[in-house]
Image (cartoon, rainbow, N blue to C red; front, side, top):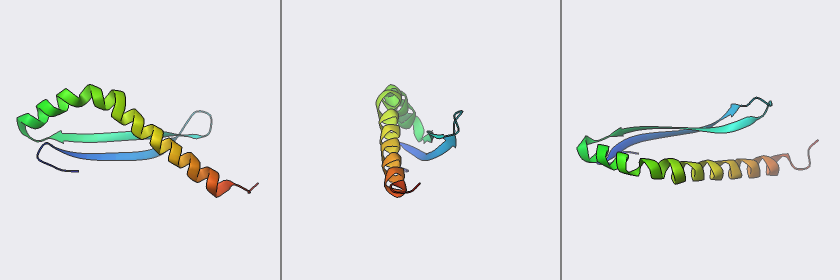
Amino acid sequence: MANRTVHTVMHLGWVPNESGGYRGQMAVLVKPNGMFGKAYMAAIKPFRYLFVYPALMREFDRRWRAHVQQNHSGTT
């Protein structure tokens, strides 16, 4: 995404976990545009980390589990 405030890229993926399964991982790269972009990103940082990113990961997990369950139902 790019606008007058920021340029940003988000990557969502699955990475192996310690128990042999996978866990969701998200990386967000942000480059503020100018002083307004820097101030804006500083102001919304707590909101992003407390609400936006966790909600995105829960939705990503929910959809992935539904996809896996749908595609593996009835198989042994």
